[in-house]
Structures are given as C-alpha cells and as structure tokens.
Amino acid sequence: MKAVLYQLVRDVIRNPVELVFMLGLTIIFALIAGGTSGSNAQVVHVFSTELSKPELQDLATDWEENNWNVRIVSEEEAMQLLSKQQADGVIEAGELDYTLHAAYEGSTFVPLTQAELNHYYANKRLAKAGVTDIVDEGSFAIKTEPMQEGTNFDRSLQALFGFALYFAIFTMSFSIMSLLRQKEEGIWNRLILAPASKTALYAGNLLFSFLLAYVQIFLSLVLFNVVFGYDYYGGFWKLSLVLIPYVFAIMAIGLLLSGIVRSSQQLNAVIPLVATVFAMIGGAFWPLEIVRSETMRTLSYLSPIRHALDMMKGATYEGASLAEFLLPTSVLLFIGLTVTGIGIRLMERKAL
Image 1 (cartoon, rainbow, N blue to C red):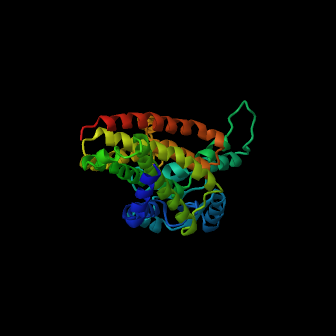
Image 2 (cartoon, rainbow, N blue to C red):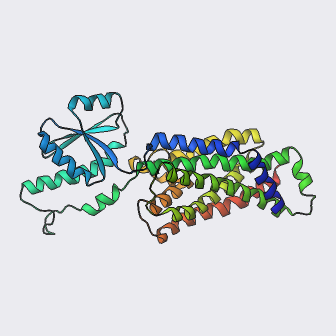
Image 3 (cartoon, helix red, strand yellow):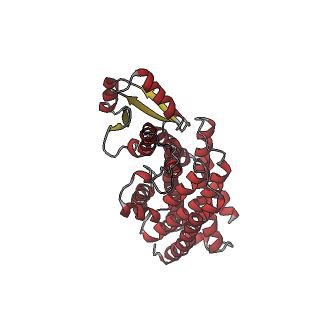
C-alpha cells in the first residue's frame, strides 16, 4: 500500500495540473458567487419617497445593527441598479411599511432580508400603537429569536463551501479513474502478481484519492482565509474535522461509478452529471433556504453536499456544537461504508 501511495503522490507532484486547475475553479466561482470580501455584512440599498433624509439615515443606522451594510440611494439610482442587475434587490422604505424590489425572479435578496424587515416594521407599528415587544401571553407576541436565527447567513462562506465541495467531487472521481485505466491497460493484472495483496492495492489508490480531495478543499479554505480575509468564526479546526466524512462519502461514490461504467471515457461523461446533480439539490449553488419546493428540500438529503454544508455552516457562522454533527456525520459514514463495499465488488466483477 505504501508503495502504491508513494508512486501516486509522486505523479501528482510531477504533474499537479489537475489539482491546481480544480483549486483555481473553486477560487473563481466562489469569488463570483460570494464576493471578494470575507465580511458577512450584507449590502442593502434603500431609498424612500416618504421619509426625509434624517429619518432615512436613522433607519439605516438601526438596520446596520443587523450586520447590514446600508447604502442610501435615490429612487432613480435604485431603479438603475435593478435594471442593470448591479444589485439583487433594493428596499423602498416607508414610515410603517416597506416594499422589496427584486432585480430578477428567484433573487436571494428577498428571503434574506424579509424576516428582519418584517420584525423591524412590526416593532415600529407596535411602538406607535403604544405596545411594547413584551406583552401578556394571552395576546399576540413577536418572537424575535427564531427570526434572528433563521437569517443567520454568510453569503461568502456559503459560496466558498458549496463550490469547494462541488469541485472536490471532480478531483476525487478523476483520481479514482486511475483504477479503471490500470485495468484497461492491463497494469492491474501485473500488479496483483506482486507481493502486495488486492486489499493493499485498493487501499493505496483509495487513500490517495481521499487525501487529494481533502487537500484540495483544505487549501481552498486556507487560501480564502489568508489571502481574501474570510472569517471562519473561530471554527477552522471544526471545518477540518467535518470534511473527513464528506470526502470519505464522495470517495465511495466515485468508486461506485467506476464499477458501474464500462470504460474511463464513460466515467468522464458521468462525473460532471452526478456532481452537478448533487450540487444543485444539495445547496452548493444557492442556499436551500430560498427553495420553496418541499419535494426538492426532501431530495436534498440524498446529496452528500447537503450534509457537508450543514456541518460546515454549523462549524462557522451558525455556531453549532459537535453533538449536532453526529447525524450528518453518521449519514455520510453510512454512505461511505455501504457504497465502498458495493463499488469494490463491482470493480472485481468488471470484465475489462
């Protein structure tokens, strides 16, 4: 096993193009989707035809307490931002109500701001009516804690985590493809005649694939922290741990795909399809919070990316404890253990 692992590592060191390419794609797409700043302050453009400038400034000061980067614009500027899609949406603020203008259908701006705005304006209406937030249990009460928890969101980290997990699938599967090529080229038949057992040969190849995908994600996280100043909320060490079950699961899925397809050319075609499906239903490209379909939310649990994202967000800006990682970790380990056995069995039965 050590000899196989050593040879594969040497091959990557001599030709690191694949690793560098996938790392570069992660950086590019994460920056495009999440912005170049590691700050989680959401940029909010606001205008008003009802409030005076001092009133609008006071309102902006209140909203900045929600970790919003509020920018006051005129109505004309707001419409230009929307028409050119330079902003996902703008807020038209009134004294006791508001209107959200989205730049396009499905914009994440609406669900990410609506809860806080509803809470803010509900408090204003209550205050004007002489009612405070705390009222008798017999009448209605505004529950602020669930709303605040539901809007705890970091767009930059969401994009980084999603694309890092997505492109790691490509690296993992393409590295496992070496097993297929060894069988196609007859190298595997010569290897099994060596003193090393089949178990050692499989273990060496799979361990290499695991380490390669893990290192790719890990380097992405380090790079975005050091170069782009992304804040992991003190949870970097947790991120390093929760990546392990995810990488193990996608390693197993890559092995299963290698056992199902008939050639490495077919695997080349299947990998992008499977990776993209997992990413789309798992929330890598957009937050699952904006998905309204209950069917799609249910299907998301079939994607390893969904469980890994839950843990990565929990390890950073959601502040989850380690006990909350037990369920997604168990699911990923179950996938990995079950699918690895099936994949190896299919690889052994493959007639090449």
